[in-house]
Image (tube, rainbow, N blue to C red; front, side):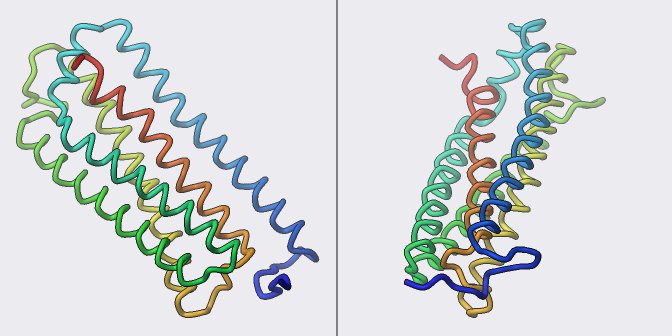
Length: 211
């Protein structure tokens, strides 16, 4: 199997070096993203340690059904993204495109579910502010962090949808060669990071206090 030359980009002279550079760059970016989310998780932990009972009560006000369904959807999307990356590497173009498309559909489903959940939260007056539904001040801290962390995750998911959707569309139109293309590997790593972050958020927001 010959190496495709259409995926080679300046200033790289060899595809191997281009892939190494792209992989190194995305890992540096992912590390910075982990530091960013890590700071929010550290803040959440500090407030939870200071207000364990109120955070437990506030956590029970979140919708476990939406959180669990979203987790299942995102984990399935991680699987389809992994299949897409492996299929692209094995030059199984049709399977790679279908898997990329399935990843986009699952990502959109996650955003739609999150939108329904946000609407429910707003209806229950769980947005910190004057009309907040709970009396305990620390409950507002919990939901402030809930809104910030889930909204930032949704922004990252939306960016991932753009990256995966571009590969799916351009791959189907043959405007991008998927086989051995570093863009596929970089996009897959980004998508998996978004899913991993959700796996960390899910027990912190939805599960604690429900055992």
